[in-house]
Length: 230
Image (cartoon, rainbow, N blue to C red; front, side):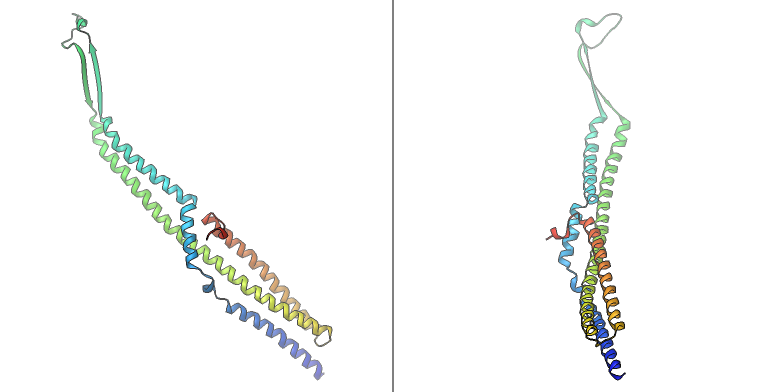
Protein backbone atom coordinates (compact mmCIF):
# COMPACT_ATOMS: atom_id res chain seq x y z
CA UNK A 1 0.00 0.00 0.00
CA UNK A 2 2.89 2.32 0.78
CA UNK A 3 4.39 1.71 -2.67
CA UNK A 4 1.03 2.37 -4.36
CA UNK A 5 0.65 5.59 -2.38
CA UNK A 6 4.10 6.74 -3.46
CA UNK A 7 3.37 5.98 -7.10
CA UNK A 8 0.11 7.92 -6.97
CA UNK A 9 1.76 10.79 -5.12
CA UNK A 10 4.58 11.18 -7.63
CA UNK A 11 2.23 10.76 -10.59
CA UNK A 12 -0.05 13.45 -9.23
CA UNK A 13 2.95 15.65 -8.54
CA UNK A 14 4.17 15.21 -12.10
CA UNK A 15 0.78 16.16 -13.50
CA UNK A 16 0.51 19.16 -11.18
CA UNK A 17 4.01 20.23 -12.22
CA UNK A 18 3.02 20.04 -15.87
CA UNK A 19 -0.06 22.14 -15.24
CA UNK A 20 1.95 24.66 -13.25
CA UNK A 21 4.52 24.84 -16.03
CA UNK A 22 1.75 25.55 -18.50
CA UNK A 23 0.40 28.35 -16.32
CA UNK A 24 3.87 29.84 -15.94
CA UNK A 25 4.29 29.72 -19.72
CA UNK A 26 1.05 31.63 -20.14
CA UNK A 27 2.11 34.20 -17.57
CA UNK A 28 5.52 34.65 -19.19
CA UNK A 29 3.92 35.74 -22.48
CA UNK A 30 3.19 39.47 -22.21
CA UNK A 31 0.77 41.25 -24.53
CA UNK A 32 2.86 44.43 -24.47
CA UNK A 33 5.84 42.51 -25.83
CA UNK A 34 3.83 41.62 -28.95
CA UNK A 35 2.68 45.18 -29.71
CA UNK A 36 4.60 46.99 -32.47
CA UNK A 37 3.72 50.68 -32.56
CA UNK A 38 5.63 51.33 -35.82
CA UNK A 39 3.58 48.56 -37.46
CA UNK A 40 0.42 50.00 -35.91
CA UNK A 41 1.26 53.37 -37.47
CA UNK A 42 1.58 51.72 -40.87
CA UNK A 43 -1.79 50.05 -40.39
CA UNK A 44 -3.44 53.40 -39.61
CA UNK A 45 -1.83 55.09 -42.64
CA UNK A 46 -2.87 52.21 -44.90
CA UNK A 47 -6.48 52.35 -43.68
CA UNK A 48 -6.62 56.10 -44.26
CA UNK A 49 -5.30 55.62 -47.77
CA UNK A 50 -7.27 52.62 -48.99
CA UNK A 51 -10.47 52.32 -46.94
CA UNK A 52 -13.32 53.17 -49.37
CA UNK A 53 -15.16 55.55 -47.06
CA UNK A 54 -11.97 57.57 -46.53
CA UNK A 55 -11.63 57.97 -50.29
CA UNK A 56 -15.26 59.05 -50.57
CA UNK A 57 -14.49 62.03 -48.33
CA UNK A 58 -11.82 63.15 -50.82
CA UNK A 59 -14.41 63.05 -53.60
CA UNK A 60 -16.83 65.10 -51.49
CA UNK A 61 -14.15 67.73 -50.94
CA UNK A 62 -13.45 67.84 -54.69
CA UNK A 63 -17.15 68.35 -55.38
CA UNK A 64 -17.33 71.12 -52.78
CA UNK A 65 -14.37 72.88 -54.42
CA UNK A 66 -16.05 72.60 -57.80
CA UNK A 67 -19.25 74.09 -56.37
CA UNK A 68 -17.29 77.11 -55.12
CA UNK A 69 -15.78 77.65 -58.56
CA UNK A 70 -19.21 77.24 -60.14
CA UNK A 71 -20.74 79.76 -57.73
CA UNK A 72 -18.03 82.31 -58.50
CA UNK A 73 -18.40 81.94 -62.25
CA UNK A 74 -22.16 82.30 -61.98
CA UNK A 75 -21.70 86.06 -61.46
CA UNK A 76 -21.87 86.31 -65.25
CA UNK A 77 -25.38 84.86 -65.18
CA UNK A 78 -26.62 88.13 -63.66
CA UNK A 79 -26.16 89.99 -66.92
CA UNK A 80 -28.15 89.23 -70.05
CA UNK A 81 -27.13 90.69 -73.39
CA UNK A 82 -29.29 91.05 -76.49
CA UNK A 83 -29.11 92.78 -79.84
CA UNK A 84 -31.54 93.95 -82.46
CA UNK A 85 -30.87 94.62 -86.11
CA UNK A 86 -33.00 97.19 -87.87
CA UNK A 87 -32.23 97.81 -91.54
CA UNK A 88 -32.20 101.40 -92.70
CA UNK A 89 -35.13 100.84 -95.02
CA UNK A 90 -37.32 99.06 -92.47
CA UNK A 91 -38.83 102.23 -90.98
CA UNK A 92 -42.48 102.52 -91.91
CA UNK A 93 -45.44 104.37 -90.61
CA UNK A 94 -46.81 101.15 -89.15
CA UNK A 95 -43.52 100.13 -87.51
CA UNK A 96 -41.58 103.31 -86.83
CA UNK A 97 -38.01 103.04 -85.50
CA UNK A 98 -35.83 105.82 -84.19
CA UNK A 99 -32.62 103.78 -84.55
CA UNK A 100 -31.36 101.91 -87.56
CA UNK A 101 -28.69 99.19 -87.80
CA UNK A 102 -27.51 97.03 -84.88
CA UNK A 103 -28.85 97.78 -81.39
CA UNK A 104 -27.30 96.20 -78.26
CA UNK A 105 -28.99 95.79 -74.90
CA UNK A 106 -27.93 94.63 -71.42
CA UNK A 107 -30.25 93.48 -68.65
CA UNK A 108 -29.40 92.93 -64.98
CA UNK A 109 -31.20 90.25 -62.91
CA UNK A 110 -31.58 91.96 -59.52
CA UNK A 111 -32.73 88.74 -57.82
CA UNK A 112 -29.62 86.86 -58.91
CA UNK A 113 -27.45 89.78 -57.83
CA UNK A 114 -28.80 89.45 -54.30
CA UNK A 115 -28.55 85.66 -54.02
CA UNK A 116 -25.07 85.14 -55.57
CA UNK A 117 -23.03 86.09 -52.44
CA UNK A 118 -25.21 83.78 -50.35
CA UNK A 119 -24.65 80.89 -52.78
CA UNK A 120 -20.88 81.40 -52.66
CA UNK A 121 -20.87 81.45 -48.84
CA UNK A 122 -23.01 78.32 -48.80
CA UNK A 123 -20.59 76.53 -51.13
CA UNK A 124 -17.68 77.49 -48.86
CA UNK A 125 -19.54 76.20 -45.82
CA UNK A 126 -20.16 72.90 -47.60
CA UNK A 127 -16.43 72.62 -48.25
CA UNK A 128 -15.66 73.32 -44.59
CA UNK A 129 -18.19 70.69 -43.49
CA UNK A 130 -16.68 68.11 -45.85
CA UNK A 131 -13.20 68.76 -44.47
CA UNK A 132 -14.42 68.50 -40.86
CA UNK A 133 -16.23 65.24 -41.67
CA UNK A 134 -12.99 63.84 -43.05
CA UNK A 135 -11.04 64.95 -39.97
CA UNK A 136 -13.62 63.33 -37.70
CA UNK A 137 -13.51 60.06 -39.62
CA UNK A 138 -9.71 60.17 -39.52
CA UNK A 139 -9.93 60.06 -35.73
CA UNK A 140 -12.61 57.35 -35.82
CA UNK A 141 -10.72 55.06 -38.16
CA UNK A 142 -7.51 55.52 -36.15
CA UNK A 143 -9.31 54.47 -32.97
CA UNK A 144 -10.95 51.52 -34.73
CA UNK A 145 -7.65 50.29 -36.21
CA UNK A 146 -6.02 50.48 -32.77
CA UNK A 147 -8.85 48.56 -31.13
CA UNK A 148 -8.83 45.80 -33.74
CA UNK A 149 -5.02 45.60 -33.74
CA UNK A 150 -4.86 45.26 -29.96
CA UNK A 151 -7.54 42.57 -30.11
CA UNK A 152 -5.50 40.76 -32.76
CA UNK A 153 -2.37 40.99 -30.60
CA UNK A 154 -4.29 39.70 -27.58
CA UNK A 155 -5.53 36.67 -29.51
CA UNK A 156 -2.03 36.06 -30.89
CA UNK A 157 -0.55 36.20 -27.38
CA UNK A 158 -3.18 33.86 -25.99
CA UNK A 159 -2.55 31.39 -28.81
CA UNK A 160 1.18 31.35 -28.06
CA UNK A 161 0.54 30.77 -24.36
CA UNK A 162 -2.01 28.05 -25.00
CA UNK A 163 0.25 26.38 -27.55
CA UNK A 164 3.02 26.22 -24.95
CA UNK A 165 0.54 24.85 -22.43
CA UNK A 166 -0.49 22.21 -24.96
CA UNK A 167 3.16 21.16 -25.39
CA UNK A 168 3.58 20.86 -21.62
CA UNK A 169 0.36 18.87 -21.27
CA UNK A 170 1.45 16.57 -24.09
CA UNK A 171 4.82 15.93 -22.46
CA UNK A 172 3.15 15.18 -19.12
CA UNK A 173 0.69 12.85 -20.82
CA UNK A 174 3.51 10.98 -22.56
CA UNK A 175 5.43 10.61 -19.30
CA UNK A 176 2.39 9.25 -17.48
CA UNK A 177 1.60 6.90 -20.36
CA UNK A 178 5.13 5.54 -20.15
CA UNK A 179 4.78 5.10 -16.38
CA UNK A 180 1.34 3.56 -16.76
CA UNK A 181 2.69 1.02 -19.23
CA UNK A 182 5.33 0.13 -16.67
CA UNK A 183 2.67 -0.02 -13.94
CA UNK A 184 4.28 2.90 -12.11
CA UNK A 185 1.09 4.95 -12.01
CA UNK A 186 -2.64 4.38 -11.95
CA UNK A 187 -5.07 4.50 -14.82
CA UNK A 188 -6.88 7.36 -13.12
CA UNK A 189 -3.79 9.56 -13.21
CA UNK A 190 -3.11 8.66 -16.82
CA UNK A 191 -6.76 9.37 -17.74
CA UNK A 192 -6.55 12.73 -16.01
CA UNK A 193 -3.53 13.65 -18.11
CA UNK A 194 -5.44 12.68 -21.25
CA UNK A 195 -8.33 14.94 -20.24
CA UNK A 196 -5.95 17.82 -19.56
CA UNK A 197 -4.27 17.32 -22.92
CA UNK A 198 -7.63 17.16 -24.74
CA UNK A 199 -8.80 20.32 -22.96
CA UNK A 200 -5.61 22.19 -23.89
CA UNK A 201 -5.91 21.02 -27.49
CA UNK A 202 -9.50 22.24 -27.68
CA UNK A 203 -8.44 25.60 -26.23
CA UNK A 204 -5.73 25.94 -28.88
CA UNK A 205 -8.22 25.22 -31.67
CA UNK A 206 -10.64 27.83 -30.31
CA UNK A 207 -7.81 30.32 -29.93
CA UNK A 208 -6.74 29.74 -33.53
CA UNK A 209 -10.27 30.51 -34.69
CA UNK A 210 -10.44 33.67 -32.58
CA UNK A 211 -7.10 34.81 -34.02
CA UNK A 212 -8.32 34.31 -37.59
CA UNK A 213 -11.47 36.33 -36.86
CA UNK A 214 -9.44 39.17 -35.29
CA UNK A 215 -7.02 39.15 -38.22
CA UNK A 216 -9.84 39.26 -40.77
CA UNK A 217 -11.51 42.12 -38.88
CA UNK A 218 -8.29 44.14 -38.94
CA UNK A 219 -7.63 43.42 -42.62
CA UNK A 220 -11.13 44.70 -43.43
CA UNK A 221 -10.06 48.21 -42.40
CA UNK A 222 -6.63 48.24 -44.02
CA UNK A 223 -7.97 46.58 -47.19
CA UNK A 224 -4.81 44.48 -47.37
CA UNK A 225 -3.33 41.31 -45.93
CA UNK A 226 -1.24 42.00 -42.86
CA UNK A 227 1.61 40.12 -44.49
CA UNK A 228 1.61 42.63 -47.36
CA UNK A 229 2.12 45.65 -45.09
CA UNK A 230 5.83 46.23 -44.58
